[in-house]
Amino acid sequence: MAVKKIKWYKIEETAEELLFNENNIAEVKVKDKKICLIKTHDGIKACASRCPHAGGDMMDAFLDKNENIVCPVHRYVFNLDNGRDLNNEGYYLKIYPVQMNAEGIFLGMEEGGLFSWWG
Image 1: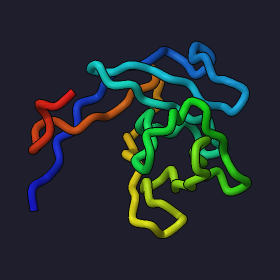
Image 2: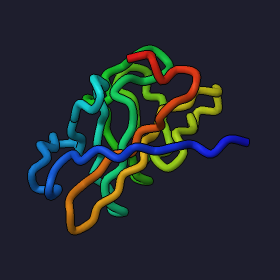
Image 3: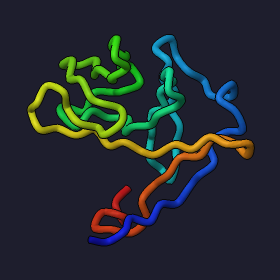
Image 4: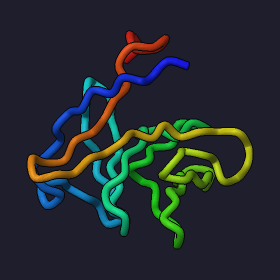
């Protein structure tokens, strides 16, 4: 199995610079892709800005009591660690790795692969 190559993009120096909404979600653009950053008790997590079920805007989502993200359109619930649809309908929300260190906050994106050329 091929090893995924990750390229890291600096988002901000600190979390205080991110503009989180009332649901602790902020949106950033990396390589022309909109990504949602979510503030949780475990730190910042990242996911695609659109729900894989019906394209709902995840900026309008909210976190449930277990810190899963809930789509605002049809209330699909996704685990922020692996993107799995907890409604068991087979959908997966794209999850991106996030690293925070003394140099700032970084978002990881896969390089190469079948869809690397696509937006």
